[in-house]
Length: 228
Image (cartoon, rainbow, N blue to C red; front, side, top):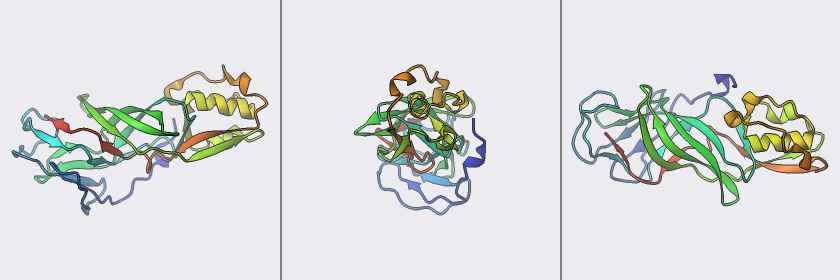
């Protein structure tokens, strides 16, 4: 995997999530940044989430945004038809007005990159807290349509510098450049590469979706997220 030096989180993040509302209001905070969540009813105690004493009706509404980061690469390359597994992390302590941390900074978000509307987006499936607790989440990123063209004769090493790549995209790069020495640790999901590269031989170029994981993949909740 790539060294964590590729991720340089900002020292300040402006964001406020309003429970019961979809509007986002800036909030000045320190790093790791915090986003405040305002409960629609009841007040929990001051322990960190997950906590069985939190009220059962504490809800983050659909439309709220969750900032994320990916520390293993500067960019992600996939084909336009590819689905690739990916795990992101929450880039801010998400808190309510009582400063109770409901979703801590660094909480994992498990999901996958999927093709959609001529581009790709990240679809979140689960939150994974530091104690192993899992919570289903229905959230997606924007659709990314930015492309990077891979041409015959290009250096695979240059294309993949600072990048993570889907298994299908790795096959494309291998086939077009003729370089079959792509490291498996660079491939999302660790999938085998090169098996289907033969049919690409002779093609002059192909286009891949190029994703900046630290700016393109911030999530928007598609349905209410109930925290217990």
